[in-house]
Image (cartoon, rainbow, N blue to C red; front, top):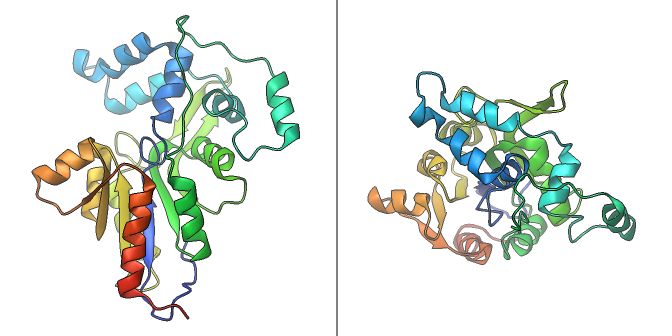
Length: 268
């Protein structure tokens, strides 16, 4: 996605961001998996590459986890978000009349996921300026897309680059991995491809937002790095003396983009 810039200079800025625990405040994959199999079983499976490395690779473990999910995309997002802030009255009524799926664990806990409080304003800031936002995630593309539709409204225009999905005969989820890396999306490679294919000008700026260790390779391919406070990405940037900015909400990300625009672009 390379929209035409509103600015007279050819150089522009492109925003690439992780989704889970970056755009959202919790990991949506972990939440739906815990809802469907229970937290104890999820932890047990996650540890299999350590406890039984001869039989379980990271990829095989991921396949095993997602095999526990037997929901439609809509049902999964209903559990995590509900109808969403942009739902119509008809959609809200339909949601309220739908029988709610009970979580695997009997104890009371919340599986609800919230969006970063500054993200929607940042998205609208970018939209009016034709600044592309692209999500690069190890999650599942149609799952992420449905959540964005609920959070922002249908037709938001944010591109998602993540793993695919198909449904097996028993209704379980089968991930269609985007590449051969353990989690299906090697983000450093994804950013190199983005720099080669997305930019209108080779001097365009790439800004990356993330939180986890899987975001570090993408950060290394970026010009501006924003790391969520207190996360693995922040620690890795510090340990490797890589310049970065810490953020707690996307208001800080918007400030960085505004600063870049003020020094690199002139409105037509």
